[in-house]
Amino acid sequence: MLENLTKRFDQIFKKVRGTGLLTPQVVEQTLKEVRMALLEADVHYKVVQSLIGSVSEKALKVEILEGLNPGQQVIKIVLEALSNLMGEKEEQIVLSAFPTIVMLVGLQGSGKTTTAGKLANWYKREGKQVLLVAADLHRPAAVHQLKTLGEAMGVSVVSPESKENPIDVMQRAIQMGRDQGFDLVIVDTAGRHQVDELLMEELALAKRVLSPHEILFIADAMTGQVAAQVAQVFHQQIGITGIILTKMEGDARGGTALSIRAISGAPIKFIGIGEKPDDLERFYPERMASRILGMGDLLSLIELAEKDFKPERQIKAGGKQFTLDDFRIQLKQFRKIGHFDQLLDMIPGLKGVKVRPEQGEMEKEIRHIEAIISSMTFRERHDPDIINGSRKKRISTGSGVSVQEINRFLKQFHQSRKMVKQLSSGKGLHRMLTSF
Image 1 (cartoon, one colour):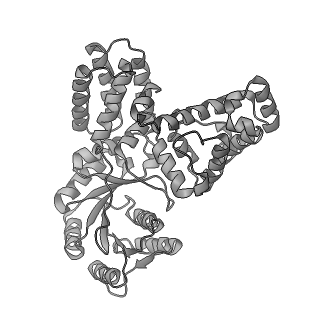
Image 2 (tube, rainbow, N blue to C red; image 1 turned 120 degrees about the vertical axis):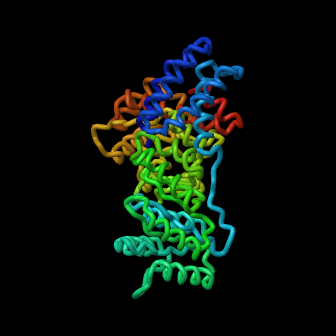
Image 3 (cartoon, rainbow, N blue to C red; image 1 turned 30 degrees about the vertical axis):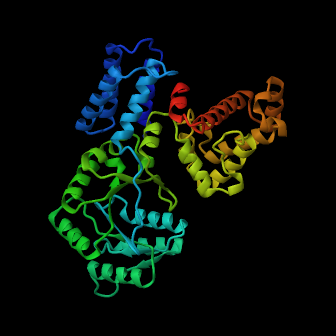
């Protein structure tokens, strides 16, 4: 996710971290490179101009914070600017009515039907009664796909009966939602390959019939500026209340995430990171900005642990209980949900790390790490600082892993544990930047 942009920022900030003074010349050169990185990431040029202007003004006026060198100060300002660009704060779907009606709109191929299933799965796991509505009759496969998703998740689906049109299906679904006490009704509407007058007329009619509490635009993150421009048209013509970015796991550039809020005027509420029902995340602007700058996203990692793992083995934000024993058990849980490389991206310093990449299988990677930890004594797992050269040789013999790989793993573990402690101290951003 956003690998190219993250690499560019890492290269840029490596140069500026060692800067002794934050002179206008240093700011100008740094922002010139930031501008090029954003444009190459397919961020809309107007958005780039606005962001660069904001960062430049603050970088030349702000006083250097205690504990931050000039280079770190620039990183802090860019982090805040990226966060503000994407929305400043988290925007949620508010379940304010019974049922709350959510209407999904977008172009064909953006992932509306898959996203409908993911949303249903998300709220079902929160204990909500969810009803899916298959109202995309322009693509017959969409009805079958939604029914299959609903059956797999144990979620009810209203599908068209003989001679019903989309409006008939929607009206019947809303009545069913009210009569049977559903908390949430999610309506999958038809799309087109491009915006046209007929599509907008159909969606306007659906909006009048449904009176939805949320109209969410589903945007393919792989399409860059195009997604932002289409979202703007949808917002102007039917009034969307939010955006869900799909296919973020394959978006190496990042232009959509950085442009779409500023161009469309609608907030991003969720991002899709894969094809599985669980591959959906809430969108947090500051956390996404942190990921883009290569700082990781431990808060999302901790939330993932709290949601998916056994309560007695959750990662502790205070850091003192985050031992290698805990880490080994988390690895076993991570294996169950997959996307281990995405989880590594959330840990500061580990983005893009591929241990033993020649094997090509993350499962083997996890087994090697588990072997390293299993070859340690109880004391070593709970106090890895005592692991000296002779202990590493013993662990290497027991695990079948080289001393060099053990050194690399321990370094990465220390980085992640340190960051957990810093984020829990109440001065997370400041401490994160001083160790970045």
